[in-house]
Each structure stands twice: as C-alpha cells, then as structure tokens.
Amino acid sequence: MNNKQVIWMDGEYRIVDTRNIPVHHEVTEHRLGGGVCNTFTTIQAIGAPGTGGACVSYLISYPEREPMIPGDVPRTYQVLQFQNGNPVEGINGITNEALLAIVIDRLSMWQETMNRSRENALAITHLQEAMNWLARRTILRSRAGVEGQPNVPMPS
Image (tube, rainbow, N blue to C red; front, side, top):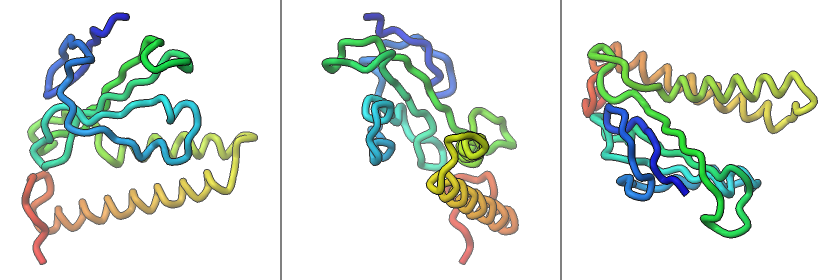
C-alpha cells in the first residue's frame, strides 16, 4: 500500500508518509451515530495549533471500501485547512462559518428530496443558530477593535 500523499500542512504542500504525520489529537465526535462511513472515517488534528490556539489542519481518511480487517484496504486522504492568522494579512484557509454553510447546504438539498426528515430540519436549525452566534462574536470583536487579532480577549 502506498502511504505517500500530497497534503497541505503548516502553510505548504508536502509529500508525506501518512504514517509519520505529527498528530495533535484525534477527533471522534463524528462516530456518535455509528454508520459505516463514520465508523471507518478517521479525523486527526495535525501539526501545531495556529496563532489563535486552535488546530488549523485536519487529516481526514477513509477506506476505499469497508475493510474486513483493519488496515487491509487502501485509504483516501483529504486535508481540511482552516484560516490561520489575521485574514487581512492573507487568507490561507476556510472559516468555521464556511464549513457550517457547506453542511447547511447539503442538508437543505436533502430536504428537497425523499431524504427529507425532521432530524435534517432540526440539524439545519441548530447549524444556523451556530452561524448566528459566530456572526455575533465577529460583530462584537469588530466593535471592540480586536477582530482578526489572535489571543486578544473580548473586553468585559
């Protein structure tokens, strides 16, 4: 199996052996509801946390088919790169809001098909609520003159 992958990490593209990527921690919350995709999908925060203190790179991997035994199937790798630092100085990744908007869009499209459900509608509502709280945070930080400045607390 080829473990060499091209990924974006710490501000540059790298060809890496996925067995040797520095892992900060593994994310497991996606496995709450079970299901084949979530059970076999691995999410790892990789590299050092960014300027604001949160991880900015996540390596997501999943098998090309359901494995019968762990490690018997080639995996596909994708890296999710979040904004690191003040966007005024350069945009280098996506925002939390952009990721939430994608999920809202996907669920909204399902609501227009036979896949519509009360659970999808409630998930959309709560994701939109999360977007509103993030927008409020941005507005308050902007009013306080600290928007885009990492590690600067909100004034009381």
